[in-house]
Length: 119
View (cartoon, rainbow, N blue to C red):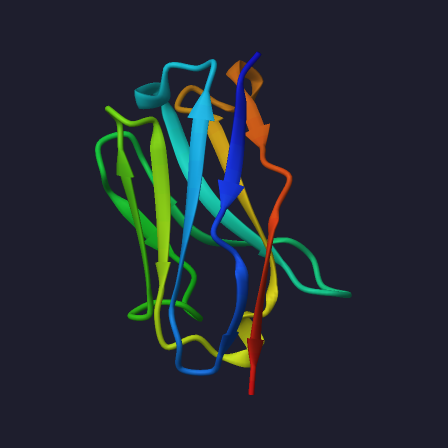
C-alpha cells in the first residue's frame, strides 16, 4: 500500500523557520513528482512547491525566495524548508506524490501537518 506521511509542522513566530518532511513508502519514489500543498481555513488547497524526479522545481509566487523543496530518491523523502515565515503562511500543509505518467497511475496524499505562524 503506497502512502506518504508528513512531519515537522508546528507553531513559529513570524520571521522564523520550519522544515517539513514527507516520507514515502510502497512506491518507486523516483517515478513520482512530489509536491507540497497547503490549505488555509476558508480557502482552496493550493500548490506551494513541486519537484520532479530529475530535481527541477516549481514554486508558488508567494513563497519564492523563502521556501525550498528538495528530495532524496535514495531515502524516499522530500522536504520543504520554510524560511522568513509570515502569518499568511499559516495552513495545513499536505504532501502529494503523483506518478510522472499522470495521476491515473498513482496519486497519494498525506494526512497533513499544521503550520501556524504568529505575528
